[in-house]
Length: 263
Ligand SMILES: [Zn+2]
Ligand SMILES: [Zn+2]
Image (cartoon, rainbow, N blue to C red; front, side, top):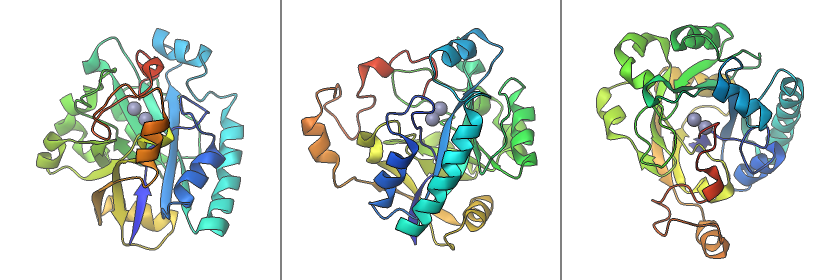
């Protein structure tokens, strides 16, 4: 049995930690698998272009380096920690309307693809490269941030197009998703170490990318709330904390509010 986190961001988009730092953060805590899922925004829309200028998204230019670092860090993570590192990205469609915004995780994806198409076509393109399409934070995240309701609004139509839907994101569990009987995963959407205290997915399969992806498809998994042993110390030390209710608080960095790439 091992813990996995299938949604996190590095300095290739709006995360605070580099990919090696993410590997060490999880490896030192005994996790069995992580997926690194930096934002990949649209390149046609105003918000998507703004994200590119602000270096909040993967681009065709940064993609080869991203994949190369993911490959070498996957090797190191396995030798050092027996931890599987799965490559991926988060297709990020942000609109001024919450109901037109959608974030789609591509887990196990190694080919760059623009986020410009309709979500149904995007999910099919993700799966066509052998990756899993996962609906990220599909309902209200209870945070002061851009909300992404488009996938949830179309959940009946999209049911067969997605491998799983996030039933929890960070410290929040989504009753709507839990009651929907849709296939699920639970992840942190980690942007900084303080967000380690969050929901995670638990697997009982072999520690390999293929076995983990198969377990998600077959829903042989459970989820649990993980309390980071280092979490309390960091809260006390960190001046940026704006929510006293940690770990049930939300954003702790004011500069993330209004971040065009969203969470
Ligand atoms: Zn997101
Ligand atoms: Zn995210």
